[in-house]
Image (cartoon, rainbow, N blue to C red; front, top):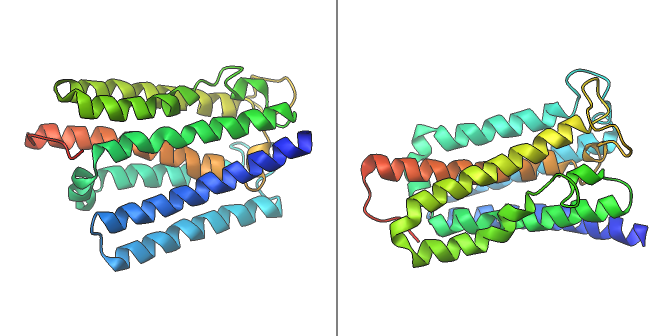
Length: 241
């Protein structure tokens, strides 16, 4: 049964990551982004996944004695890149064109992430505090994402405040699990010392959790907040649904 859980978790992680790549490229096409930009985006996404997978397979990331851990070499660039994308002035018009329902519904993928974390917990690979049975309640963002889409469509008068509150709550939950994950690693600053330690994120395909899936969740919230700020700034009468 443990082997089955690991196989299911592996399939979920790979499936979610590849599906999100496809959704990003489909979204760019639907928004009328140039073919050249779509191509370079696809190359960038695939290249990043292959690079991080290769580093994980080589074992180079599986060293937590250094400060900071080597894992940060694939995490921090992705997080910084998401922030650059959010605030780059040349992308401002594009972010205003993205339907808000896309940005809200996009976060549903976090349900699958929490499921594969739980499956790995049942196989004694992930510590309990990183699951919804412990201190990780990030699944609430994924579960409420469809509700937010519905509320956005049904209650236009409350749109901006709802989006703001939900995004801030989602960011809080995301930062919570990121902090727990870091404090569960076998480092000099480890707080959660019960076995197992958080080392699975240095292996394939789960390296994509901190290097790809978490940054995408952050990007989704940042873009939604950025869109709201831009619309308030330019006093746009209506969001694109």
